[in-house]
Length: 66
Image 1 (tube, rainbow, N blue to C red):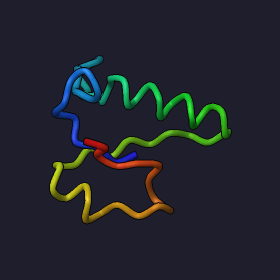
Image 2 (cartoon, helix red, strand yellow; image 1 turned 180 degrees about the horizontal axis):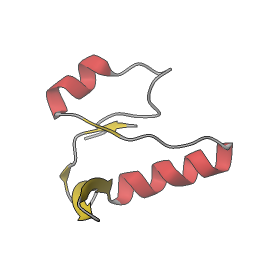
Image 3 (cartoon, rainbow, N blue to C red; image 1 turned 90 degrees about the vertical axis):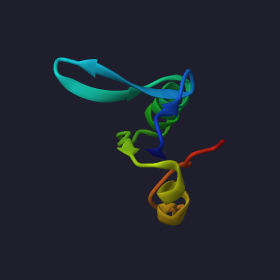
Image 4 (cartoon, helix red, strand yellow; image 1 turned 30 degrees about the horizontal axis):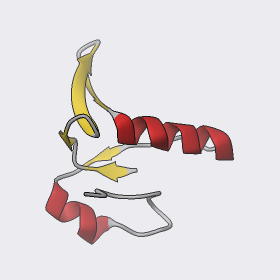
């Protein structure tokens, strides 16, 4: 999933064990979808403008749905 983690509570960064991690509602939904279809979720952090230019259905479930 490509996302711009600037929109709490939908997606935002938290520091866990010294590493930034994208969390929030969108990340939870994406994880549930990944679990249901049996794939590993990968979240790619990017700025909002580049999110649209990098989006391709094969590479992302969704991207910056705001």
